[in-house]
Amino acid sequence: MAKSILLLNGPNLNLLGTREPHLYGGTTLPQLISNAEKQASSLSIQLESLQSNHEGVLLDRIHESRGKIDVIVINPGALTHTSVALRDALLGVEIPFVEVHISNIHKREAFRHHSYLSGKAEAVICGLGVYGYEAAIDYAAKHIKLKEKAQ
Ligand SMILES: O=C(O)[C@@H]1C=C(O)[C@@H](O)[C@H](O)C1
View (cartoon, rainbow, N blue to C red):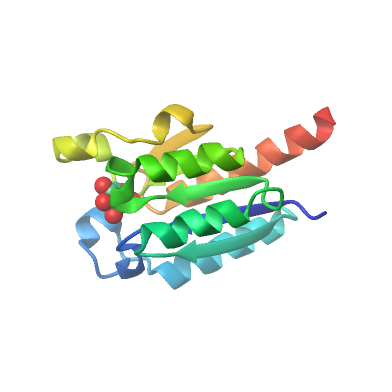
């Protein structure tokens, strides 16, 4: 079965490009997804993606990924700081994940400094702008290839 990455973006990330560009930059979500698809393809890895403003939709997509997705790259948006359910879903399907934040959450309001996911992530990338997604996908691909070699 082809190796695959699921790229998840949480609430308000559909506004990328116009949302607080001093924090999140000018790249739109469609541009970001297109770049990610091209990068994954160059690494011979399938990429699926979903953005949702609804926690349950993200949870359902994670559940559906069990046994089908090799690594999840997720920017949970504000759910980072609030959602035990999202942490439980990721742990529940036993799929390794990489956490991405466009901004440096540790340089922002105190309520953004805590993540319910970071303690279980393979890696946490924040503050690199949208390049963080490129780094995360590169890391995820390496994780997949290392796992293939070990088998
Ligand atoms: O930097 C980001 O990508 C994260 C995106 C959001 O929407 C915020 O709620 C997070 O606090 C930070």
